[in-house]
Length: 213
Image (tube, rainbow, N blue to C red):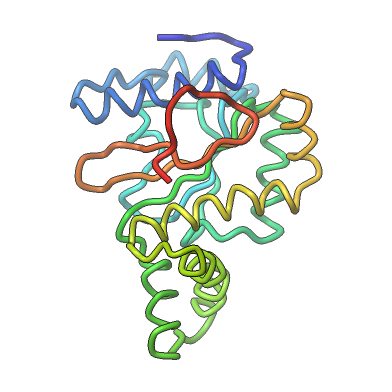
């Protein structure tokens, strides 16, 4: 397993996926979860990845990627919808903490995606601020359907890829970091049943893995 104090985007991606493979296989190592790591990271943090994922309770990042304290800088919202607070948090992870990898993590059976599909079908949207979440997911559903992608898996992949592109379009800090090779952005789709994370999109990184989209 690669462990380095200054990982490249490729190193960071390999670390993340190796942890997921251990989780899927049922052989987690639980790295960096002891008292020594707690003491080591108390003065400062140096995460190797910024993980922007859905808030779903089944997507606990450090568990499904078998990581520990100080490894991941985690930002989560329902349906991984990105507002200014999210963009600022990701920029902090990239520009201040120097994380070489940004991950957008979606998952099957996502309630926000399902709600957006339902709203388009029957014209009924949820009340309160849940409506804002659904409205931000809706463009991804429309884009998928316009491209002839109708299945739940295809719509999810589209939403993940749309989110990746949205981050790069809206954040000059992130776009510049990717353009100079300091950081890469990948989109992953998590399968609840088997715990695996599948590559959907990549920007600034040649993983050698075909995307699931």
